[in-house]
Image (cartoon, rainbow, N blue to C red; front, side):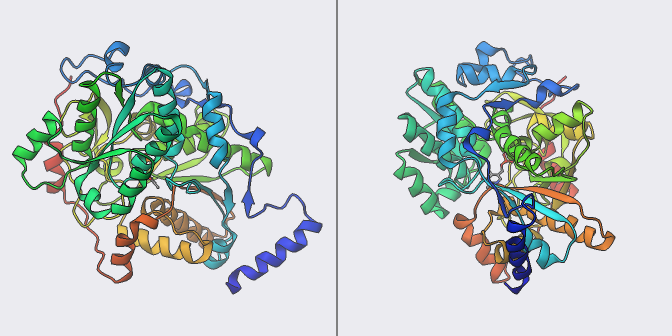
Length: 473
Ligand SMILES: *Cc1c(COP(=O)(O)O)cnc(C)c1O
């Protein structure tokens, strides 16, 4: 705590003398919130590859996608050209309940590290879902409601997406059917109960309520489920009933579009103080928070206006960008979803059971994959004990208990700040603090009592997943 005193004193002096000094929290006014999402695809020379029909391997047509997804969301999914898309007023009004989210200057962490670097983080944990996922949940639920649907179906793993969607559906009076990976359903009763409170109906997956669930149960009795399997069930449950569509919390282009609100607010806040980031860091599971955070900055890079170093951080135990293949793959285990071209470990890849830190999806957003493939962003893989070490260090000085997912970004932000300490450079480091970790206390417990271990898959392990890649020409 002593470490922060000088900063606090500095701030007091500053209020009288240097009014343009950067505050701990940069808030925006309501009228400074974005009114449009930014669609980075419009500025990409190499567009992300189209989704393919899993049967014919032809690009998915809007009519086909509309069987699964809401009409307006299909339009957004396929729109590679419109740079700005209006955020409906109803969605903006919902955003106002928990946005704009603060951009925090991590003065205390800087002082603790003794770094000349300036560290900022965009904090998305200030709503009940505890993460950025609400930004897309409300948009997707809004379009479902507008289409006159009865409800939506989805999957959830750790539960953040299911929680966010439950909140959005409760607000708009839509049914919300969540297929929750069985192991999480059993191990995370509190998350489950939050969703119940918001009126969602929750089924542990695999279940006997769908054909694909029954098939997976027959083939793998006693399985505790996976995200890919829950996706298959949720899709089947949507397409086999009238008035339902499926919604997804990450990976898709539409989700990255909605999450651009994070990057746009970040940029407005930094611009207010004339701060230009040198490094922008985000954790990468399906790529939605990272894609949203970096979109406006990548847009400037693509238009040749500015240059930034952008780092995607993933777990060493689920390294889709750093060790995956850039190929068309199934988005789900049941192989009912369209094929997406992405960096992937194969839909048959299952992360090691000791992996506690989230970000366990086998693939990556097509947009993020294309940007990585084109060398516009870089990627790093980090081990989970290092991630939790960074999480605890951050929690103790910055006050917020971070989600394990977010802590991947913290780890690399700290690494970069320590590099600055060696070189004496005062770089501006910006990272996405995507959420809080209150529902991840088993993971924290295993770190705190020293039983957490690291597991890095061998090339042979990865081969198992690669063998499940479809052949697409
Ligand atoms: C879901 C989630 C992530 C990872 O998802 P992306 O789509 O890669 O952003 C990261 N952090 C938190 C807190 C999450 O809930």
